[in-house]
Length: 267
Image (tube, rainbow, N blue to C red; front, side, top):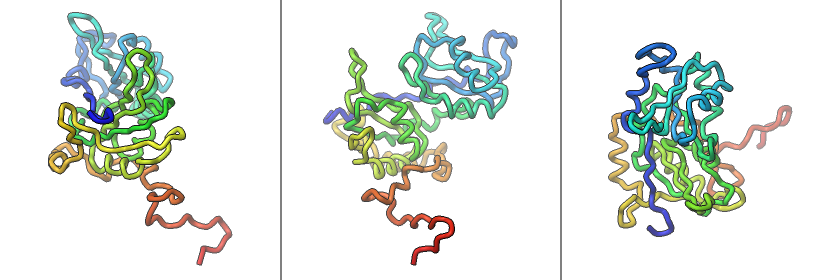
């Protein structure tokens, strides 16, 4: 794949993860208790060294924790890379998502979502972009913080790394839930500086394809007809998408800033 732009597998939550949400086989609160879904966070991309005790200690810093559950494989007794944290109230869960999303545990960024939302239904419509010429200091969290301004990112941003050293290979991938978001990200960020280097943004090459990129008319039609499609108005506030009027190509058509208090408006 030319330029390393082929999209790797960016899986969302494991298939069938919601069956673990409502009930646990055993626990302090008895057999098959119901969780408060609105106060529960789905925690994904967990390293194999993370256990329930560590996850509890991390999350209790954001608010009172009622229960932590990391499902395990029945045969190997190894966890499956995701878990659930139930807080005392919904506000605590929302705060934890804001504070803890994309922090690193054992060098691996974790992902927090509201457990009441089935993110698997909106994952991977094909709005996947390639981000190139990345500085070595750019990590997954910086990519997330930068590109989440344009819309909902459905999987943890992926930076391709050397398997032996763990160093960045200078490019990565970001997957959005809509083409409106990915189009806005490419338009605004292509050629912009991130850690003092101009980055390149374009649609990623499809996995196992002969150079075909995401963003085709067929993919857009399928995404538009998806019954689970979120409305564009539900997208996050686009802080970067509006652009900087001082930068060429960005901020076109934006009104000038208001004058300082006590100053007359410009003619």
